Amino acid sequence: MKPYLFLFIIIFLICLSNLSSAVVEITIEYGEEACIENWDCTDWSECVGGTQTRTCTDLNDCGTTYDAPDPFESRSCTVSSPGGPGGPGSPGGPTIGGDITPGDVTTSEEPEPEIPPEPELKESPYIQLELSTIDEIEAGEPFTVNVTISSTISLDTTIELLKVKQNVVLEAGESKILSFEVHAPETEGSYNLVALTPYATGNKTIYLYYKPLFLYVIPKENQSYEIHLKNFDNTSSTELQIVKDDFQTVYLDYLDGKIDYKVNLTFTKPGNYKVKAKALSGSILLDEDERVFEIKGMPTIDYSLPILVAVVIIILIFSILIFKEKFKKVS
Image 1 (cartoon, helix red, strand yellow):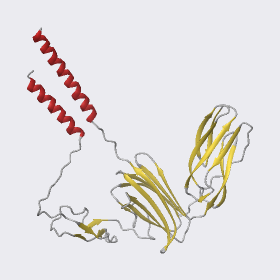
Image 2 (cartoon, rainbow, N blue to C red):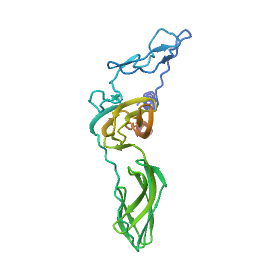
Image 3 (tube, rainbow, N blue to C red):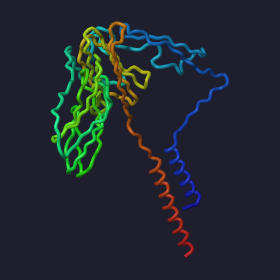
Image 4 (cartoon, helix red, strand yellow):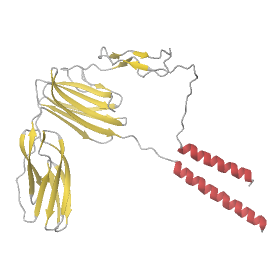
């Protein structure tokens, strides 16, 4: 093989490897006379006739719209007003952005409070449980309970706390700490938290503050979540809003009066989502809840290392072939 041809192949493969692993940056340079657009837009108007409008102005008055925001000065919307019926597909239902696909909805005007019964306390000469957590919290709010279990005998058992179960295996004389992520029961006053095993219990009394509004965000499969909302105040309305990346409202709905509302939503775009619920009596805020979660994008595959390894292998193969060819000529 000709040396210059071999050198050309090596340079080509190295360039190919660098191109595949590097980020290609394209810079557009404007001439001195070019005008750079600088758009400023008002807030979107109320939804009227299925359309929202706003006014956008180029502060540099370039006379072009190459960098104008999209949507520009109008967009479609769904009419939704406080006191109207709610739920996807209903008149006056929610405003839903393109980041969300709505699913099943269930609604009841008679919400039932979720108050797990307190188990009967048990004692064991071999097993001991201790609970460590906050002393007070709003009803329905998520919190963490640490359960320390000790045993003088070998043990394989299950601990249950507020319907959450965990398995634990202990050797004789061993202790372990298990963390439980739970929601406070929907009641008020003193409540006895009980960690239960078939052999013994541990307990701690906490104080629950009253609230009329409860919000639960429950992860499902394939980037879907169940949004479960309860409002026990029949004189108020409820605003349910989902905001993406702290600035884009992708879901907005209003529900009237006392209600138990569930909606399944599939989130189609990655981002940080904040679910906010407010119980309102006129302009007075009675209660509010907020939950945050993240939708991650599909992982990207980095081909730079495999290509680099392939280039090195090809170089080694060609080097061996050239060495053999030269060795034959010498011999």
